[in-house]
Image 1 (cartoon, helix red, strand yellow):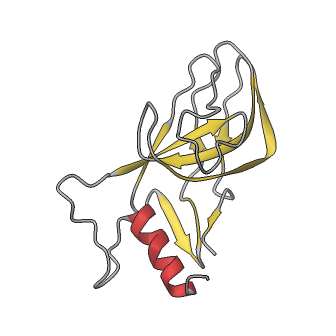
Image 2: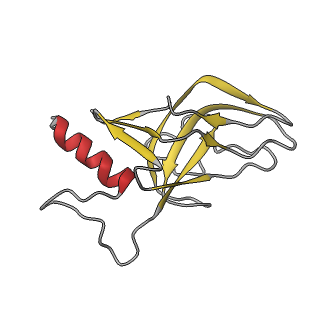
Length: 142
């Protein structure tokens, strides 16, 4: 089974831009998320993982909030990418090799993992390095 291309794009707009899908889904909950939270990982968090699975541990690391709007994410052609680079805090100590990123529902803790993907090339983090995901980073629904 697969989803129709129009619905794939609509689904991404619902998740990333809080845009309703007429007669199917809306964003009118009592307290809908206004941000999604992007995290960095040292291994694939997998489909059974959560936002803490293999999450980066370098000193000063924190997830980055991105608005659920067209100003936060660009959705087109069944793909979504950040509207601007996502810049993480610079490492002040520790080392990590970042191989994956994820998008989830919580600023901290074991939030729901919505999407994850590989970071290519990997990012070698050590003191003074500021990891970033560029606007070329994409999630595709297909």
